[in-house]
Image 1 (cartoon, rainbow, N blue to C red):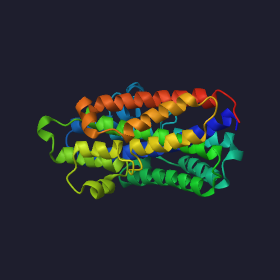
Image 2 (cartoon, one colour; image 1 turned 30 degrees about the vertical axis):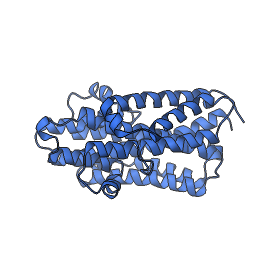
Image 3 (cartoon, rainbow, N blue to C red; image 1 turned 90 degrees about the horizontal axis):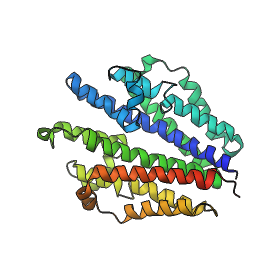
Length: 315
C-alpha cells in the first residue's frame, strides 16, 4: 500500500470519529445548559465545548460573546472552522474519494449521503429539540460507517489504518472531555458532591456513552475518582483510554514495517502505562497533569505515525 493511500484512510476515519465526538460534546452542553441558571453559568457551560475541541481562540476572534447559538453554529455548521461537523464530514468524504478503490461501496455511500444531507441543513435544525435530533443523527451516521466498515471491508492494511485513525482520535477526545470537566469546570467548594456536580459528572459519562456502564460496574453514586477510573483504566469500557490504546497497539503490531519501530514503541509504552496503572497513583500526582501528559504523548505518537508510515513508501 502506498503511504498516501494509508494517510487518506487514516484521516478519513479520524474525521468521521471527530464529527461524532463534536456532536457528543454539543449534545451534553445543550442538555446541561437547560439545567443552568443565570447567564454566567450558561456561558461557562458553552465555554466547555470550545475548550475541549481547542477552538476557543478562533471562536473569540469571530464572536464577542459566548452564546448557545453561536457555539453550535461554529462547531456544527461553520465551513471555516476545520473542526466543525460539516468540515469533518467534507474532509472524510474527500479522503475517501481520493482512495475510492480502497473503500467499499457501502462505506462510500454512507460518507457521500451524509455530506449531501448536511448541505440542506439550516440553522433552524439547531434550535429546540431539533438540535438533539441532529446530534443523534450525526452519531448514528458515524455508527453506521463503522458498522459497514467492519461488515464489508477486507481485513487488510486499508482496514487497519482505518481502525487506527478511529481509536487514536477517540482516545484524544475522551482525555479532553475528562480533563475539561475536572480542571476547567471545577465547581465551587460548596457545590462539590451536590446536585450540579452530580449532573455534570453524569453528563461526562453520557458524552462517551458510559452512563449505563458506570451503573453496571459500580452500582453506586457517581464520584470523580470512579468516573476517571472507568474512562482511563477499564479495558472493558469501549471509549476508555486503556481500550483505545490496547486496540491501537495491536494494530501497530499488525502493520509493522522496517520504519515503524518507534511508533510501535510509543504505542506500547502508552498501553503498558494504562494496563498497569492505578487510579490512586494518578490522582495523587494530579489528574489534570496526567491527562495533559497523555495528550502530549498521544500527539507525539500521531507525529510518529506520520513519519513512520505516511512519509515513506512501503509494501
